[in-house]
Length: 120
Image 1: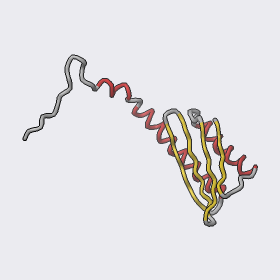
Image 2: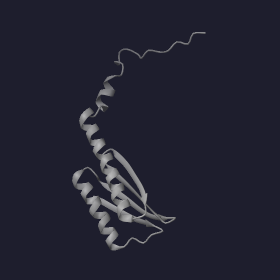
Image 3: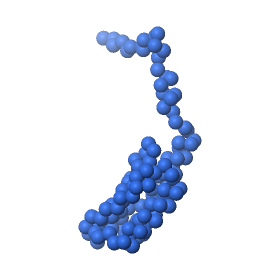
Image 4: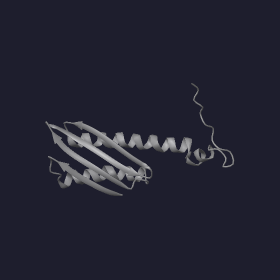
C-alpha cells in the first residue's frame, strides 16, 4: 500500500510519520484491497485536524477528525475509517455485486421499450 503523509501548518517529524504508517499498516492488513492512502495532518486555531483518504477496489473513502492531541485525533480518524471499511465490506458480502443483474432488467432487443404518452 502506498501511504502519502502531508503536513499543513505543521512539521511532520519522524515519530509522527512512523505512528501514522503503523496505523495505516494495520488497516492495510485488515483490508488488503486498499491500494493508496493520503493522510493530511494540519493545525488550525490550536486544534489538530486529521484527514485520511483511502482508495480501495471500487471505493474512495474519507475520514476526518479534530482534537487537541494529534496522536489521539489520528487514532480516532483511523477508527472511523476502519468502521466505514468494515461496513462497506459487510454490505458487499451481504448483497453481492448487482451490476450484472441491472443489465438483465433491460428490454429484449426484439421489443422496443415502452414510451410514455402525454395526454392533453
